[in-house]
Length: 399
Ligand code: ATP
Ligand code: MG
Image 1: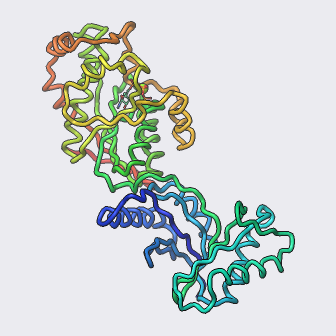
Image 2: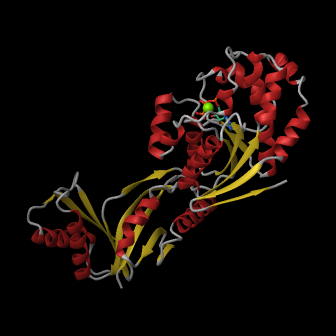
Image 3: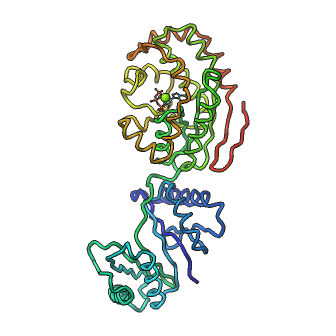
């Protein structure tokens, strides 16, 4: 008879036609997936609105917590679905207010009669419900301009909905609606944030990490897996490719100019990332590069490094200050893991004076000293694949 639900407000209003339908289906699938461990939940679309419905009122808070991490939602409001009956509307509006007093001091009722057969007109219903609420809470005041609470009432045929203020969602596009990308995930602060921002644009994320055991420890690898796990809060499931990078780094160290070691290393990383991306049908690479932050992130350096691939490289944090990146990283829960002190393969082999404007011809010459094809093939073959979901981890190798 009476149903608890959450009325969802979706973003990207400009979306139309098939795009909008795909967007909504993806969003509904993602929400179902998030709530799959809760019983008695359904996600449905009726009369052009998307709802999450459930019988057990105790599920309200857990569902809200899940929805706060779903991209594509601009907001959502706890609502009650009841039969379209004036007395029931009064009781339900009163219950909504009861939940929110004493924080709420002012309110207004906003009724919408979608079904014109309902005998009471919106304006009249506003007065009637408003009067009923004031009778029970004489301390409340009506404020039609800036009320603390808007009691929304929607009369839709046999059923009506009563709901309060919106809880803000995180916006963006539903994960899975924009194709697949491969994130170069280090243990630092920037790349997890870049991954988060890519997810926000609706991509499905896989990750690749270059690991130089024993120069970098098992703990350094675990740190990256933990970061990927934290990203699954937003991305449901992440496949991470861990590439053995020790031999490549030692070869670079042995044969190449020290000042070019980072440039050469990055060029090789990109080649391997491209190979893995292609094998996974990923259409772009994503990095946490931010212009000017370190030696390898000047425009000259990016040109020299980028030259090895034709794949688009997305750099979601390119225009951000470190401070802004750190703020996002704190908000999404990756910061505490990112600042753990475990060494990264880039820091272990860090040259004293890396070239800030590496020349392409010199980089190519340095690279020519290496048996590139073999090194890259072996790294790809030795790559370990780890599936990370919100719940459990499973390991297996491929190729
Ligand atoms: P981050 O905080 O993401 O580590 P950073 O500021 O330390 O970035 P760099 O070390 O120059 O910058 O790395 C630039 C980008 O290269 C990283 O954001 C990441 O996308 C990629 N990268 C660096 N090291 C690795 C690694 N070991 N495995 C995978 N990707 C890496
Ligand atoms: Mg780093």
